[in-house]
Length: 472
Image 1 (cartoon, rainbow, N blue to C red):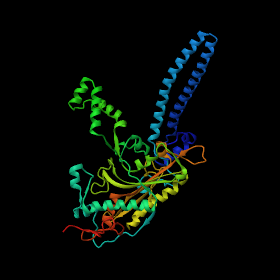
Image 2: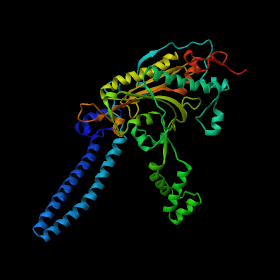
Image 3: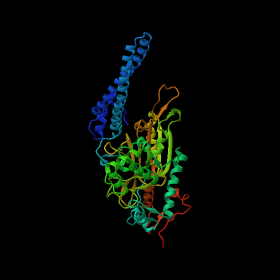
């Protein structure tokens, strides 16, 4: 969320930042809403001042036994009370409109972010590791997994549809081993605190990290049958006879009516399945004032993640690259504004260290203004080499968000000698996407006979086995 005061003070800088994102200027329209809101607030303040002074004048009039004046003043106060009540509603309306407008505007990129339109304008920062060479044509991970009889997309599709997978035996253990290795690396060597958070959250948590309202269609919701029953009962209570007949016959002939009832109940009754542990981890500091001496705060979590993958039809339809459900080890940092840039570099290095330990070749790129995420003001993507695809593919995205999320969550910090609190900075990154890391292991460590060699650092987690072999 942007600071309207900062936009008011320097609208040209705000519009220049939006232009770098390929967006039209918005400062003028935002400032019109802001002016309407502030004018209304001024009118309310003046009315409240008049009410207070008139109340004092009533006492003076009564003391002088000027009952006519006292009645006039009482009538005036009654009018002012009505004006204030109506005015407060108008002011809330302006505030809602302004906040709604601000909530769908992306973060402003840092000066160090390269300008560009899309992924083709991203800039490579560094490359690490040696790409493996094979005496045979390397296979993609789904061919390897299916050849091992341990990766079953058909069984998953029968239960859940497309973009799901069932992992069995050694591959199921390999995914668990990768997650344990990542958590141990981040907690024991990098100083992150391991957290086991909820994966069902409410609207305010998703709003805080900026998945809502703009990216609602990318998320999954979860509502219990008991809640659905209560919603139906509420709909029936409010229904006209004709609407009730449709509802009771399970014929939704009044779509707008039902949609309104469901939407009204959603903020209180629905949960969201987290698209990443960034959501619950970052929201751990919402509505708090943190001691700056305790920052940076570093957290990591291994959770399932859920994404609707809206708009990805036809992309990565085979395999584990783009799924509705996947697991990820997430990194989140909360820090002071002064620590933000250094913490971003450190977080990215922590994610890279996972790949170094696995001896997987990768490259790190900085995303251009046209490709970076909504809440980010600077993002590094780490792309691992996949020989089966003969391409680098994203395996981690590490972003610093400045105070963009903190303003949405009202998360602040304060030093011992400071008079006022200020907003924290938040950062998040994959450390790593576990499924994609397994994809990289399968493709980089595959053998001609269809087996897969276990990387050295994972063998203790795998009970000492050195290979996953194709069944005889």
